Image (cartoon, rainbow, N blue to C red):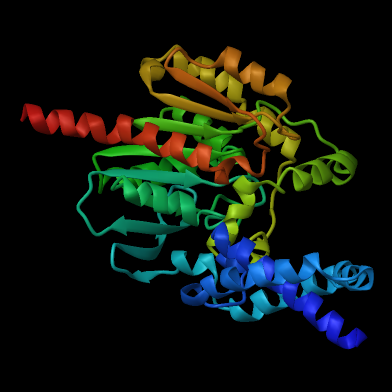
Length: 373
């Protein structure tokens, strides 16, 4: 009798989990087929009616079965979605709406490993994406790529020195050539070029632009003006805070794109190989000084979009305010409430804001020129 009650309790929870996961589109957390997910929905009312008429013992069994049912749901969805990997969307090859090519971009300091993603429809615009510290060119980049392709923009994902497939150690000022060389390479193929720089990538891109690299639009996501964090602070404060702030619908929606296993595994990178400390690197990149240089040169009219996170444990609100106050006159600043340093680049708000702004800066001008011609 006890075994029968336990079995029914587990079935109830699995049915409920399946309804919830499929209902919000978290297909990576489901164990059934998308075509037949309506079956659990039809079965749930029957389970609910039975629950109202169960004894205290049955209800106790139901709640005791909850942890085991959670483990079964995770295990079942893992097996069912073994190949549901979002990183496969960035694998080189020919697809219906795009071509993805693995290339090495030539620069004065050596080749930069990159993925060149080309829309099938002709385009005259491209965006170079520079990742954050400790990441690589594909780090949770699949949705950003999808958004840029929707506005008919080619994408160049690069590995900064000391990251990913790069054979070189990160050093300053050599890392600036990652941006300069990539932009020069894109200039040979496209008319208008934008950059999206994430954290470290944003500081590197801004310094490269300040030193003369010509782009038509610059998006900076949570780039620190400086960094003064000890390893102890990172382990005892930063990591716990940023991890807790990831448990939000805006982040959990990644389960629409892949299984829980692959979403977590996408976090794994090669780490950082560097000849300069993080503190010294951000001091050398000098984000605020780069803004001042941009504002006082012929690049002073460059459109710049600054997006920072309201719940950032790395770039604190005081540092974000320093950035806002130092921004060039041509810049627009946004602080997104509840977003964290890690979640900001994958927040739907960020993606929509950045891609719509890039469309206005890159495509609108081309369309206006075409109308004049």
